[in-house]
Image (tube, rainbow, N blue to C red; front, side, top):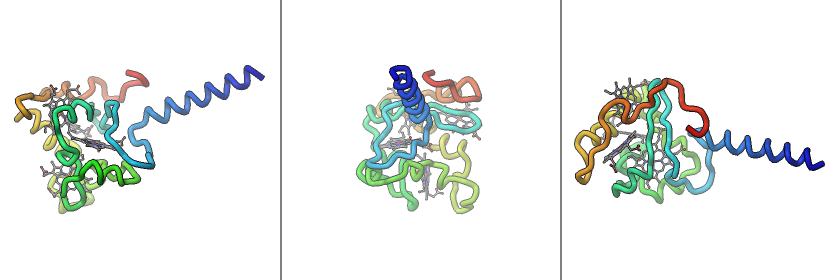
Length: 144
Ligand code: HEC
Ligand code: HEC
Ligand code: HEC
Ligand code: HEC
């Protein structure tokens, strides 16, 4: 009996860990900036930490906007039901020829790298490739 409960607990814990490990958690309810670092997936995965950037005083709308390119507020994001709407490539992709920035490289470098180069409030972000990109092609294992 005890042993069986234990196994159930282990299975539950494993599901939790696996569930949290994924980037696109199909979250329901009010969406807010994730507290933990994200790994932006692609051919050259890169790190992004909301808390580092929010501490600088940046507003959500510096990076997040709607289909008309109007900045999104924290309130507007909280009202969303699906975080996949926020994925930059959901709009910035080759199937939308009217978009100026159509690849991950273009859209992320335009937003991320250009600010790191210019600096914000006297602070500069990393501009060397390994400052954002992970050293290995495949995403790190759980917990790294
Ligand atoms: C400020 C952060 C940042 C810096 C610095 C940066 N990148 Fe990126 N780059 C990203 C992000 C975020 C992505 C999107 C992740 C992806 O596509 O794998 C990306 C995507 C790319 C891609 C496209 C990969 C794909 O999926 O098609 C290439 C190639 C690339 N970067 C090369 C470089 C090189 C080379 C350097 C250094 C000269 C560099 N990057 C510096 C953030 C950065
Ligand atoms: C400096 C840029 C930047 C700022 C500022 C910013 N975000 Fe983000 N946020 C991102 C990027 C990049 C992603 C990943 C998008 C992708 O994968 O295409 C993201 C993803 C998210 C996600 C989805 C997370 C997931 O697991 O799918 C939520 C929710 C979110 N942001 C909320 C917010 C809120 C709320 C604010 C303001 C309080 C905010 N963000 C400010 C850049 C930013
Ligand atoms: C709902 C659709 C949509 C989403 C999601 C989206 N964008 Fe955009 N973005 C647009 C539109 C529309 C424009 C303006 C038209 C153009 O420049 O092609 C634009 C323009 C831009 C520009 C060029 C103008 C500027 O503001 O400097 C950048 C950089 C950019 N987006 C970055 C991002 C990033 C980073 C994300 C994810 C955090 C993102 N976008 C998510 C629709 C979107
Ligand atoms: C408006 C300016 C601005 C934008 C946009 C921005 N950053 Fe930054 N970033 C900074 C500054 C400034 C720092 C240095 C923060 C510090 O020293 O406290 C930084 C630090 C970082 C760091 C190093 C700290 C850490 O988390 O380990 C990484 C990695 C990073 N940014 C990735 C990104 C990526 C990826 C994006 C785009 C999705 C992005 N940044 C967008 C300004 C910006």
